[in-house]
Image (cartoon, rainbow, N blue to C red; front, side, top):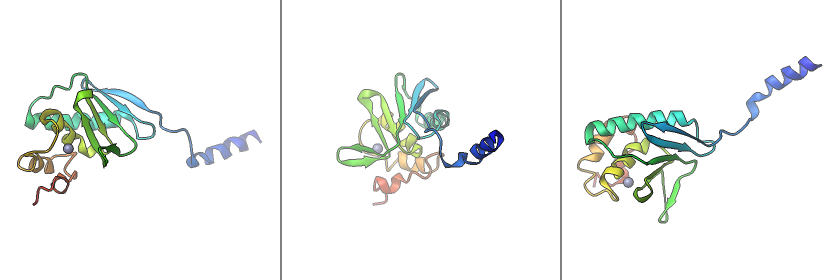
Amino acid sequence: MRLALVLLALTLTGCGGPSNPPGFCGASGVLVRTERDVGECADFAALFIQARGEYEGHWGPLDLKGWTVLIVADRIAQSGEDFDGYTYSDLKLIKIHDPILFLHELHHVQDGFGHVGWCADFVPWERGVSPAAGANDTNHLSCGQ
Ligand SMILES: [Zn+2]
C-alpha cells in the first residue's frame, strides 16, 4: 500500500508544485532581482552579462555601480503606457519584462531619457546584435519613417 502511494505521488507531479520564488543574484557587480515565477535569476544574469558585454564593446563602459536590474512578471505601467522595459535613472533601476530589451535599457543608462538620434546610430547597431536582434525598435521608435 505504501509503495502504491509513493508511485501514485510520483506519477502526479506534472500537475503543479511550488511557485518559483523571487530571487536575487549578482551579474558583474550589478544586482539582479526576479519577481515570483519569472524564472531563474542566474539565467537572467547570464543574459544581462552578455548584453552588457555587447553594449560596452561598441558604446564604451557603463557606470552601473549601485544599479539593480529587476525582472518583472508583468509589463511596466508608466505614464499611461505599458512597457516591456523601463529605466529609472534616479533610482539606478532597470525594470525588464522582456530581456530582449536589455540593450535598449542600457542605452538609456548611457544616453538618458528619450530616443533622440537613436534611429541613426543605436537602432541599426541593435538590429544586428544578440540578444536584442529581435527587439524591433525600428517600428517602436518609428525609425523607418
Ligand atoms: Zn526607450
